[in-house]
Length: 105
Figure 1 (cartoon, helix red, strand yellow):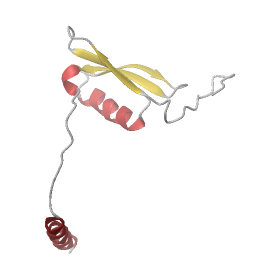
Figure 2 (cartoon, helix red, strand yellow):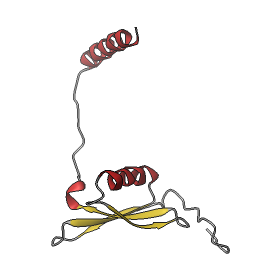
Figure 3 (tube, rainbow, N blue to C red):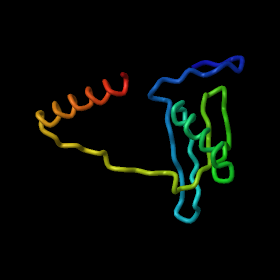
């Protein structure tokens, strides 16, 4: 991780963090991230909602970006758990094969 001539720092996956910060008074949140997938999504939000989303800072050396977004864009959900039997799973698999075969034909 040495940098003598403004080259790009190479961070480990562990070091490539994402931090979402907000307070209870304001309706905005700061999102600092190294996650390329999240950056693409937030860049898209900035284009779709330029009045709501802002790219605050881009650090090419550290390969990170900071955004300002509305708090209501942040969502934490419980995972969807589908409890089906092996028999139901097999039937669903066969049905999807038939559907996909019809689509391809």
